[in-house]
Image 1: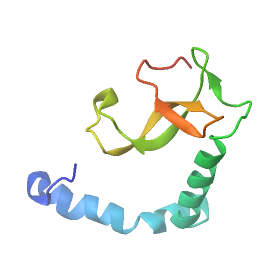
Image 2: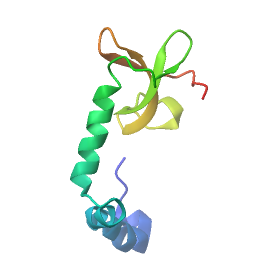
Image 3: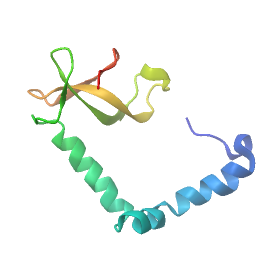
Image 4: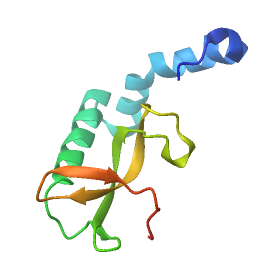
Length: 105
């Protein structure tokens, strides 16, 4: 799912490239810490979601949260693209299942 700079014109060559290039600087200005800390925090939060907590929402007899996972084609995302999707957690096994039926907030 990589987009060619030829198909995106100047946006792909200039704006997008600079956004990616200066992402860490922008995160540091906004948050006060580097994108490395941001990524580490997200990783820790996702790991914590795999253990029982009161904050997890209840689905049809299942707990759910949103996690970065490889898409199986659900919700219109291409297969094998790493995206944030709603998932049901099986905390006893430490596994997840994409919530294809959607969830209520």
